Image 1 (spheres, helix red, strand yellow):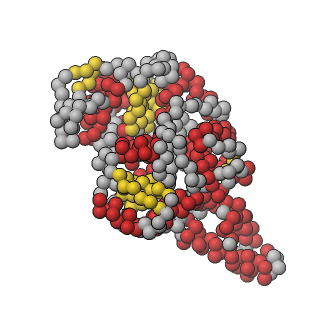
Image 2: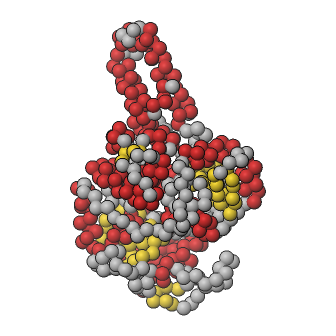
Image 3: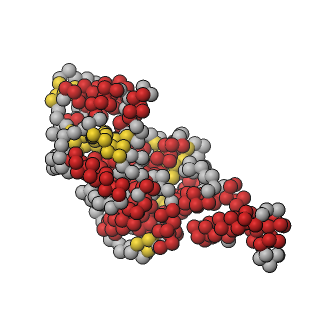
Length: 465
């Protein structure tokens, strides 16, 4: 029997979801407290998780997926919400979510997707709670990576404030942790995702609060500055901080003092600040979205992380590194990636960068017996590789079609065209000139289409079936 955890504090929705599950082999457990659920997730009690956000215990989906992956990096997670923006859904999938759904929900189709994913996955149970491992770092060898490492080494043994620039998934937190391994080694390292912080929550998360300072402040809370005292505070996606909170942050940096929300007492803090952004903060200053004085306070040193597509010579190193990690965690002996699939990896643009690659390899190792093959990958990822390889427009929104790109109109039209061309080719005894004339296209167009179909067949062998 497979176990599905439903994280939801809306009893009506939980009842509706459970009522849609008619499979006696899929047992459902509903929990409302996210923090409490992490203990059970870490022990490997569940085969999949469906999260109906926002939760009262944790409103930010990105924090939810990150926390789950820290304790169990191989469990598929599905997100449901009243409304997901396209960008939110894409970001969550890049972070490792299996799929995202917005209202109106087709609950039976969602349950079938979950059931199929669980069915495909190996029945893997972890023995005991897995503690988050000490981060391992890979020393990549491309010229772009070498330049980045030289920058890191140059500033690691200083107290310079650093801005780390990079696209989503390039490993900005990993760079920040590398920076903290210099003179700040063995001191606190605290990471805060500013992209999840509303104006109301940001001050509390950064500076803490006193009991009773606002409605939900039922006890005193220590903020990130105090937690990171004498160590490193990493502020990811700092460009998303509310303008008013930026003023409080500037004061804390300049005066090295903070006040908890609801308190008049000043607390001395000494932290090394590292921030990260996927947008240029100087441009944000020009647009009036980021304070100029705060930017100049933070901009003592800049490090730019190249996207994976600009350092593809590092791809095999990352693949081997992530396979070794997965083998240790899963007690498996996966040997590598099928050579033809690795070639397709090299042609893919990796919009989710290293994080996307890690998630793909991790899932592949879970399902593989010896080598990671296309059958070990999710249909969503196969769809994306196919769409890019063929130059076909593909909407990246997860759940846009209940059955993915294989069933959308664009793909169906390609399949129909393929079948027509094959039919005419056979009738004309594979004479391409006569085939092109009958189809009212020129020979070059026919050759191009046939080449496209060969690529498609290499990615999805069942395309022609």
